[in-house]
Image (cartoon, rainbow over all chains, first blue to last red):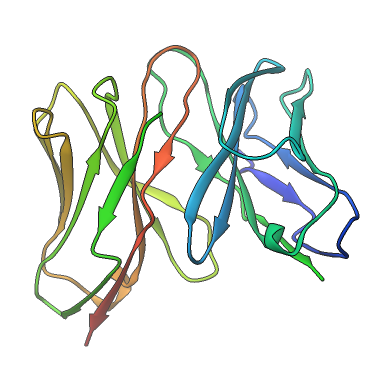
Length: 114
Length: 114
């Protein structure tokens, strides 16, 4: 069974631009969560999608948005990039059903804003 | 919302010694507590988890304890080995519900000295 796949692995963008990151969950998983990882802040929750609906949202500005498609693939968009958005963005998938718990992480997309 | 505090932020132990990482959570409704290990340059991976109806769980050299009254839980690694060197994250979430918002601690960098 293929694991969680994130594309691209690396991105360099300039301030003010926007970026779209992609996450393909493990086949059969319906829940996809996104996290921002920085050295000083650890893993911070961005949002979680389940069956194409955003079910939870972290404390990030509206520049951060996401969506989920019918095949459970998810995209995350960041508009008007700032230097502080430089981070490793991780997505995690889980079955999402009642009682299911373990989240499987992708390798992440390392975003550098210059 | 949930807040998870984790300490220490760094921990150095001699090979063969034990390591203990402690976390506290704020949301009394949290009922699932996973621990993730992230080796340098790799994705976080689940190493052990515990639900709120259990006080302790062991898996070979690692164990997790949970005190619901005090709202804290700990990871214990015995007979540490160099390959245990990594960043460890504790987390808290509420399941089931078909969704999960996992709140992570800031991470503990464990160094096992040969």
